[in-house]
Length: 346
Image (tube, rainbow, N blue to C red):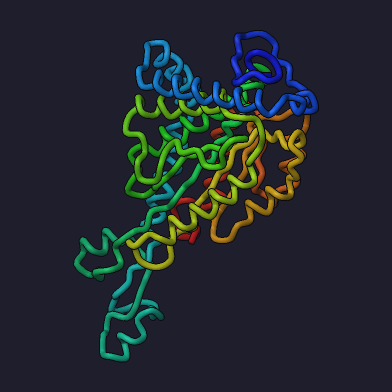
């Protein structure tokens, strides 16, 4: 599966059939050979990352080809996100009101004689514009979204078999294109997991790629990592870390009023669990981290393994997506289940 045989330093698909080397055969490789393979892979990876900074016309053509596949769905997903954001504004709590429902957080102020101890639901911006809103009720908290992409070696290795790497790239593109311009309501991050890492940073919190050139580089770095990373699986560790980091990001928000909206974590995987002895129930536990809406999307499968994994996950949290046209449907369903944008997600 590696360039140069079973101990090859990295993957290189040239269009010919791909054969997966038996794990027992790989275990026979000496530690010295493994170390040399890692060294060559790291060196080649650095060269590729440098090349990504100088995009060619062929690179742009590849991006446009991916964009053509998701463009019809970007508008629909973006519309759902915008609608959710509007709904979130309409249902926000307006505090420091002279009437409405008693605000339990201002009981002490009421005892001291303050009359603005009530709250009601409404549109903060409209209320402030009308001159009747309070000073601390108009701030809206960002909804945090973390997308965990599978950039393991098997994504690159089996791309020619079922197009799983392309589906992962299309998912990332769909996210970046749909959320572009919605920074006042959403903050998102994209990271990857593989046999060599559980949190590869592709898009950090608060620094979404500003244009399609930057978004193209995100996709290219994903492919490069998948090609040069060591084999293995860290899906469980990556999911646990993603859930905890997303929750910490939301809890650390100093702005806004009331509890922060529950962050959403979407973890993509090619469900290559049996090869590494990974029990799907471990993933179910990781997705159950408190204070987070977490979903798993299988974008590849060997035989029926993806369905087996999905069936072992909490009801409604596992999604199988083996066709490009299924991606937008799955993502929209996840957003609806997590009630992204409204304070129902708190």
